[in-house]
Image (cartoon, rainbow, N blue to C red):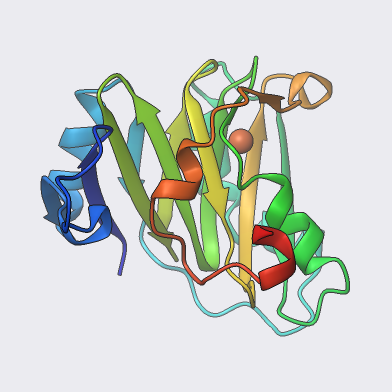
Length: 195
Ligand SMILES: [Fe+2]
C-alpha cells in the first residue's frame, strides 16, 4: 500500500529522531493525492491489471496498460513512454540505487506509473520533505525543477512506466545538498556507500 510521510526540513530537537516525527502520515489515496496536488504534484491510483508474466517484455507491459497510457498522452504531454523493470538480482542494482539517492532536479517532469513492486520518492519542497512510497497501481508526477531523490531499496523489485516530454532531456542535476542522508530510506545503505 502506498504511503505518504511529510517531515519538516528543520532538524529535530536533541534526542528526537527525524524519522519518528512525521508531521503527517497517511495511506489514504485521496489524502495523498490532495496533499501532493496542493504542492503542485500529481498522484493517482489506477485500477490494478492482472499480474504480468514473469518474463513480460517491454511490448507486453506497454500493451497491458495501453488504455492508461493513451489517457495520459491524450492531454498532449509525454509523447514518449517506456517500461523499466528491475529485479533484486540485477548486477548493477547498488550503483543504480546510489545514482538517484542524492538530491537532484531534472529539466523535465518525472512521471512514473508503478506496474509492480515499489519505490520511495522523496521531495524537498520549501520547508518540507515529502516521502511517497509508490506501490503497484500508483502514478506520480513530479514537475521539472522539483528537488527530489529516489530509493529503490537494497533488493529492488519494480516495474514502472516512464513518461517523457523528451527523454534526452531527462538528466539529473545534483544540488550538492546532503539532505537525503538525514531522512529514512527503504533499507540502510551498505557500509562502503556511507563511508
Ligand atoms: Fe529524479
